Amino acid sequence: MAVGGFAVDGGNVDGLGGRITLSVVITCVVAATSGLIFGYDIGISGGVTTMAPFLKKFFPSVLRKAAEAKTNMYCVYNSQVLTAFTSSLYIAGLASSLLASRLTAAFGRRNIMVLGGCTFLAGAAINGGAANIAMLILGRILLGFGVGFTNQATPVYLSEMAPPKWRGAFNTGFQFFIGIGVVSANCINYGTAKHSWGWRLSLGLAPAPAAIMTLGALLISDTPASLVERGKLTQAKQALLRVRGHDTDIEPELTELIRCSETAKAAKEEPFVTIFERQYRPHLVMSIAIPFFQQLTGINIIAFYAPVLFQSVGFGSDSALIAAIILGLVNLGSILVSTFVVDRCGRRFLFIEGGVQMFLCQVGVACVLAATTGTSGTERITKGYAILVLVLMCFYAAGFGWSWGPLSWLIPSEIFPMKIRPTGQSISVAVNFAVTFVLSQTFLTMLCHFKFGTFLFYASWISVMTVFVVLFLPETKGVPLDSMHVVWERHWYWKRFVNKESY
Image 1 (cartoon, rainbow, N blue to C red):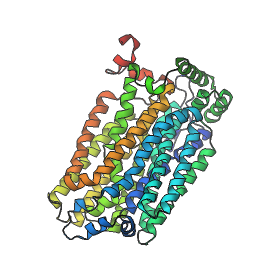
Image 2: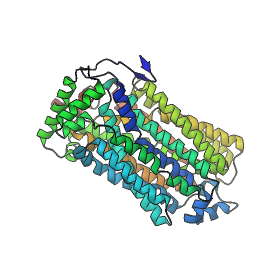
Image 3: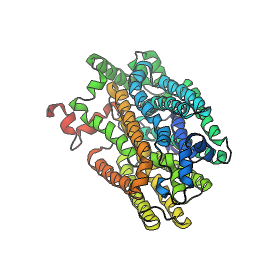
Image 4: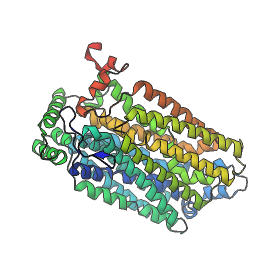
């Protein structure tokens, strides 16, 4: 029976538990709340950078530029110091996500989620009380460490906990809570924008989502795979019984986890070396390509700068914040669509459909801006065309929300064997942060120089990534984590790497 996109009894998959229990639902929902802190930060950063009191205190040059009558609309917010405020988080996230690989293997997925929440709490407190740019950026760095730890640990936690048949639906919960964080932040920005202290309240409320996810993480157990990996077999058996049900035969799954763990330990190889072996070439390529392409859809840049972007194309300050809220709600709804269909239609279908939809929308936005603002960018866009841009961006956000949004966290967390799973996820998150840093550091400058061509830039990358998925990404729906090697062995291209007899 289907309930809200999930199935109460999905049967067994290759002898492994496929049944959904109340315990696994609660555990995965609590774990997925880790996405709140990343989403809140994405939403809050773009909003406070449109608030005049915030700009006056930290970035007065932006206000002076905005006051100039003939300023190119694309260049108003082109400030390297302003982008450093936003992008400093991602350098810290990159470093912490790589460190998290060893920490999750040594201390468990859950404990690293707790560590990430505590670090984020410290950064949020510093940001809320910031008196100068140095404090602002220090706070951002601590926030970066927090999201680096949680973004590495949570998707792996969800994939290891979920029944194989419904792994996609559970894993999209992380992206769903990212979406909730973004929408909540945009609503708070809208409510605080009219007050001189509003920016401080927006930044100062960041401890709330961090406290929710940290307390939640303390109440759940670690994954059976992580417990087996650390030699805690009794606890692993108890955790399996809780999430699979006491009337379920967990021995086949537990035996397989122990076998995989013993194989990994017997090899005594450094995971960061192992992952570069020929047989793991497809895994490595996907751990780099998927997050790389996700960021080149342009979604996070548009989420960071949505209020700035909409203000640039003709919305007033309040209207720009409302437009950003609408964009976030559309994205949130589309993630729910993905939850319903990802384990039914498969990953490839959603990637391809979402890619085509995003491509058409980005081209549409570029055409509207080119026709209405001219190549100089000094002509003002009419209200009707500004609304058309918002509509196109909503369709774009929907396409992302049911494809590259949740699936970019799901795929890297489910394709790796146990011995290199934390390492593979770390590389994936690090690439995500690295590309986000570069794009967030350059987006406003790109918008200033490329103008409407910025959207064509992202459209061209979306076409490339859609072709990549068609040719190189195998379908992984319903495949148990420890049987994932089969999909590579059957793939027309990757089989030459993973089949031992082929090299």
